[in-house]
Image (tube, rainbow, N blue to C red; front, side, top):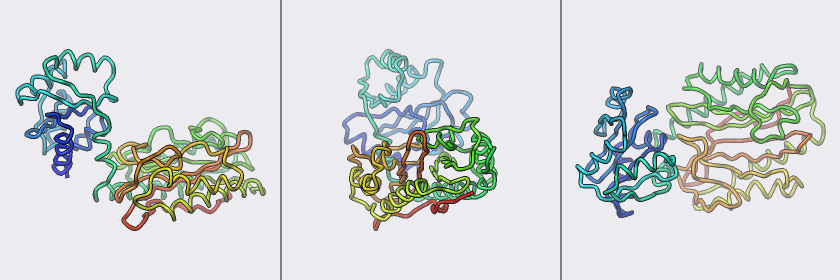
Length: 356
């Protein structure tokens, strides 16, 4: 699989007209090389694919990145990379401009004064947009683990239990079920805090008569699920039910309507139009969804500004939400795979309102 990815990358590099590309962004490095360490650079030319790392990761890199040449860099990584690039006759090198710090950019330019460094943007990210069979299989497993963990943690949610405790229980269960971990910053937001779209778990205790929004995901072999469910503690009133119904209808309508060839604006409208029609449009301020994979937010976007064109193999979220300050909020989020005929929903947790 790695060799196929390198071949695709070489084709793009050739189209762009430079001799090679230097990959520094961790998820991109992992995608191209299969190396899971946290330090290293990948250099890909038409003739060579090289992974340079430090002594700590040499054995790991040699084992994982079997399709690449593995070498050690010195104290100044870019000097080692520049020497290797010169040995290959590289005169122009694409670099991931938005993933280099200012100090790294200065060091790179100093080391490669005789090599043209060409700023690039999203070259590997665009390759990552379309998932292969192995990636989809892993994302299915991450979604399955999330679903099971959610079902188990429902027994923990009750008045007096802190949001932080619920988040810890989710993390614990996902690990027991086989995840590498849950992703950082699990959201558990109850009561008035459920109106915070990114209300990371706090010490607040769950109260009766409150929404509790849980936004979390399992990481499996580096790939991330992203699931949100909102439950209610106690007996919901008519306002609670109307808000929840609007979000649920938006989620289900979007999933029914998504198809390849549609752009991000059209996809976003599938859910947004329903929330607008119910009078809650001003309380839905984020996009309907985003790509997932080796990162929790990847390129394909469903939003009012997105020109992303959906194609088979995209995996993304569908997550409409309504957030009313002082009252509470609801978000329902599923992970979906775009197929030739529409979508396959990877998540399976129940979406009808659960009252605990």
